Length: 135
Image (cartoon, rainbow, N blue to C red; front, side, top):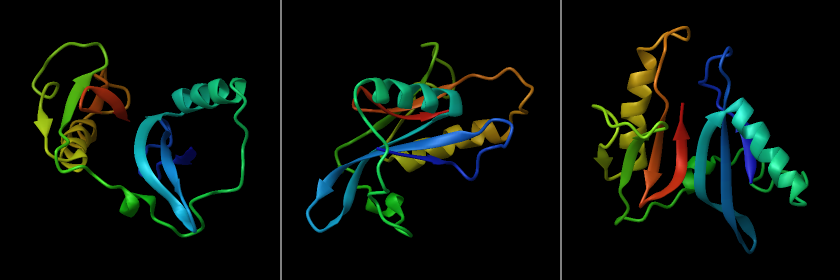
């Protein structure tokens, strides 16, 4: 797993990417999933992993490797936007052929929300399993 700051997140509400991959012989790991989460959630995840025996190691993706370019998307996959509270609205429930298309909708919502406004929290899920989170 790789935890790294989202450079596009607001400094008052830092967001982190959490990547997980599959090892490949003689090459950087293949990116399989990427979660986007609040710093507090990323820290909680790391605490839980450490409690299970995980430990920090040197970066496995290597310097200068863009892990986004390594993501392989199954052509049959679809991505659905869900609200954290389970309520449906004009955004939640939409289904897309790609993660990037779903993310663009969620990103557009958050672009119009001030940090002091009440806001909804959305997740992007693939085939019924939570893979990506967008706050």
